[in-house]
Image (tube, rainbow, N blue to C red):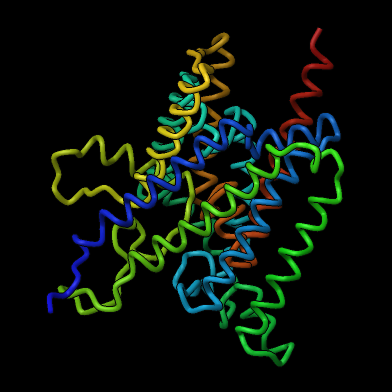
Amino acid sequence: MNEITPAQLAPYVTGGAFALSFVFGAVANKTNFCTMGAVSDWVNMGDLSRMRMWLLAIAVAVLGTSALQLTGTIDLAKSIYTGANFLWLSYSVGGFLFGVGMTLGSGCGSKTLVRIGAGNLKSVVVYVFLGIAAYMTLRGLFGAFRVGVLEKASITLAPGQSLPSLLSPWLGLSGETSTAILAALVGGGLLAFVYASRQFRASFDYTLGGVVTGLVVVGGWYVSGHLGYLAEDPKTLQEAFVATNSGRMEAFSFVAPLAYSLEYLMFWTDQSKILTYGIASALGVIAGSAAYAIATRSFRWQGFRDAEDTALHMLGGILMGFGGITALGCTVGQGISGFSTLALGSMVTFLAIVAGAAATMKVQYWRIMNTG
């Protein structure tokens, strides 16, 4: 019997990532799923409907991901989110700067991809600057500051930073029982809050956007953590997660994949550069959004208003690239995928992103009101 090789599994991983992100791109375009817009609606108009859509996505992701964990389908301890190093300063600073950046750049990483698919040329510029800044934070100039300063401030949590791991010893319960209880409490609590709003219940698009986004994240964990898992790579004789840039199980995130997609295009003839889960997911969102825009005749070319508009979007991309890598994720990467693992760091990052975006919107409003 022939052993399965990484090369044989890779098309299933990248194909699955593309298919899932294609669905996300189309649905996000249709429902106007936008985390920056969610914060904006709340801060500027007191409308929580799109924030509830984001929270619904988190609830679905928490419940679905916990189900995969409890059935032994995936092992969340092998993701980047649940490790023992609690990088509290990186989560806080990176998340806050990402929130500032997504406000200046008219949307987070996923929204940037959705806008590109719909014809927004401003988002192409944001994509490029985000990707370059992200790569500089991974391996370049910004990375020296990230590792040498921000990551020095960390706390080691021996059992890992997922809430079930942290609370199990205190509750005197097994990890599985703690996971089930906490997932039910967090997921159920969020669902109750979301559907307590009559305005939210009145719009099917809100439910569609939240549920599909949450399920896409759950599907991503399955594709990367189950379909792409090898207990023993025939070459290395070690376990492996196929076609991921991190070498670990991944779900959807849209910061590092943008950097790797630029690298892939620039080093196309380098045989060591391969199509990965993250790159395929970025391409899928653009394709899905474009397909919806073309099908509904909503595709429109859009450009910058003036030099200030250009500069703000460039700065927004840079801040998102640096902040997203520093915080280990974005509004989807940490805010949904990471949150679905019930990781403490993901929750801190989520709050920091919202705080950064809200503060920036307040400053923008103050500027408008004080401009003669």
